[in-house]
Image (cartoon, rainbow, N blue to C red; front, top):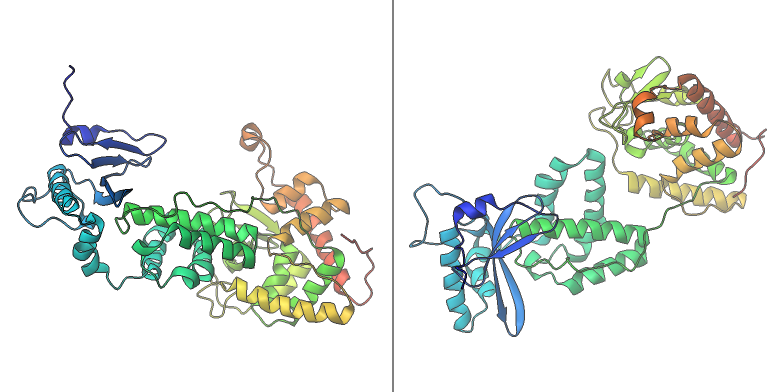
Amino acid sequence: MARIKRTTVAEIENMKPGAARIEKPDTDQPGLYIIVQPSGKKSFAYRYRFADKPRKLTLGPVVFSRDGGDLEGKTAPKLSEGHTLAEARNRVRKLADRLRAGTDPAEELEQGYFSKPSSNATLSDDLDEYLKSYVRRKNRASTANGVEGIINNHVKPAIGSKFARRITKRDLVKLIAHVEANAGPAASLRTLSVVKRFFAWCEEKAIIADNPATTVKADAEPVMSDHYLNSDEIRIVMLAAKRMDYPYGVYFQTLILTAQRRTEVSDMVRGEIDGDVWTVPAERAKSKRPNPVPISPAVAKLLAECPEWGGSRYLFSFNGDNPIRAFNKAKKDLDAIVAELAEQEHVTVRPWRLHDLRRTFNTLALDLDMTTEDVADAILGHKRGGRVQQTYNKAKLINQRRAALETWSTYVTELVSPTPRLALVSA
C-alpha cells in the first residue's frame, strides 16, 4: 500500500494557484483544509457536518512562521491574524471536540472571536471598510464611485443593518429581485456583481464562514442598450439643462455637446485645455490613451461661464477643490424639469441615461452625414481596429474631429433656438 505523504509547511508554501480555487485536505487533522485562491492567497478552513448539513468555517490566512513560535499551548490567535499549520490543527482539534459534544463550532467561535471585536460591526460597517481598503485601492475613481453608488442606493438600505454572518442566500435573492423590480434589469445585474465580490472579500478576510452569494443568480439577462435621444428629446433636455444652476446646468450641456463620458467631463481642469483643444488624460480615459477633444464655439461659451478657480482647479465644482459627484440627484432634478417642459410642449421624452448621450451623438452624427464612423469613434475615445492598427495608426484626426463636433454643436444649438433650421429626426 502506498504511503500517504504528510502535509508540511513547505508543501503548503509550494502549492501553486490554479484557474479555480483549490482545496487540499490536511493529512493529520480530519476536516482541516488548505485553500488556495486563483490569486495565490492561502487560507485554512474547517469542513464538518452539523444538524445533517455540510458546514464550512474559514480560519483565516495561512501564517508560515510566527515570532515566538506557534501558539499550540496558548490561546488560539484571532482569525484575522491567521494560523500556522500547527495552530490550525490544534484549533480544528478543539472545534471537533465541541462538535462531538453537540455544539456547532461556528456558534462556539462566534462567542469568542466574533463577538468581541466585531459585535457592533454591521454589514454597513463592513461595506465601508470594503470600499476604503479594497475598492478604492484597486480601481479607477469612476469605477469605485459606481460601486459606492450601488452600495449606498441598493445594498445598505436593504440589508445594511444586519450582521454579515447572518446574511442568507434568501436575503440576497430578495435584494436582487427588489432592485430589478424598482431599478431595472441592468441595475440588478450590477448589484449582483458588487454583492458577489463583496462577500468573497468577507470570506477571504474571515468576516464570514460561508459565502451566501456564491450561488445567487439574477433573473435578468444582460442586454446591449441601443437607446438614443431623438431631436425633440435633445431639444427638451438642452432647454432643461439651461434652466439649471451652475455647475450642473453647464455640465449637462457640455456633456451633450462633447459626447464624452460622465466623469471625463466632470473632472475637467483648465490645465487640460490648450487653445481650442481639451485633452482627456490617459489616466482618466477608459481607453488608457489621451483623447484630444476639439472645443466648439458653443462649448467654449459654456466653459467661459465656469468660475476661474485657478490653473489646475476643477471647472465643474462648488469650490474648485472637488469635482461634482451627485450625478444621480442632479439627473433626477434634470428629469423633473424635462417632464415639465415636455408636458408644456406636448412632447414625449422616453426614460434615458447619461451614457445614452454618447450613443445619441454617434447615431445622429452618422445618420445625418456629419462625419464618418472612424472619426466618430475617435471622438468617443473608442479603440479602433485590431492590435496591429492600434500599433501603427497614430493619426489623431484633429481637423476631422473639430469639423464633426462643430457641426454637431450647431445642430443641437439650432434645435434649441426658436426657429430650428435643421430637419427634426424622430426615433
